Length: 165
Image (tube, rainbow, N blue to C red):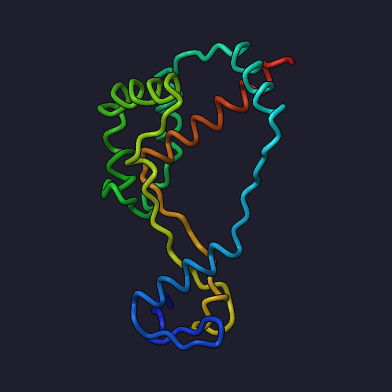
């Protein structure tokens, strides 16, 4: 049952309006999220050394087609409004423009703003559906961003194996 209750509870407070509920979920998800941070200046020097040894190759259409094939066609639609099944169904038409965009993104070390738009959806784990703490976040990202992430992950693993510092 995916029906959400009309009243949520968070930090001993009952919440009924959409804004308060959304803020409570945002606060809770932020409190349980941890991001590794590295402020070691020596890592910047090491990163420059790695980049100087790194020669990025161009992505091939076959790599992009393989990543598109792995998309789940029935997965949630991202903020761009493009359903994954459309991307899969139009793979042969999209592969060349995506190849250009992805290679440009890798060469310039930029990630287009539109691909960064993520919708966080609360998914009930167990226990009372009224308690915000009984939900986990799911990030819904655009299908194109999923493809790029998959390719980037593959490229990164291959680069790690080829680099010798």
